[in-house]
Image 1: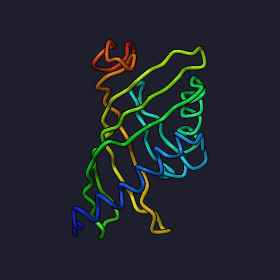
Image 2: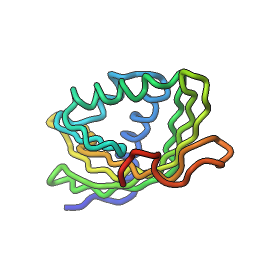
Image 3: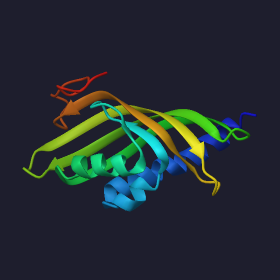
Amino acid sequence: MTGDAVFDDVVIGRLVHQYCDAVCSGDVDGWVSTWCDDGVWNIGRGPVQGRDAIRTAYERAIGLFASVNQISLNGSADLDHEEGTGTGRWYMAEYGRTNSGQNLFYLGTYDDAYARGDDGQWRFAARTLTWRYHGPPDLSGIFGPPPGYVT
């Protein structure tokens, strides 16, 4: 049976917040804990599957930045509480400064799949990023995915 839409948004909103907060605070373990063991993360360079592979890909990506602030803007989720699965979409913004001192701004949407673990916690079964903008914070950059990323 599908859950209440407002309740589902709050439950998954907390998961999305945990994800963003871990990005902002540099908490790799906290970020990885938002994933199912066999989760799939795809930010445009092909899917990465499994917590260990996701950790490695995340550490490589976050290692390019001196600072990152990720903000969840709005979203919604639809959970099937009997099955322990669900889907959702969340809009995000990210401000970053690379290790070389370049300031960057990203806008995108994450299309998600969720699964409830044996411990009762909801986690990401899959997150696929659609790039909306990347470039300087003054929006003089490119709307769409960065060069080399697939849609």
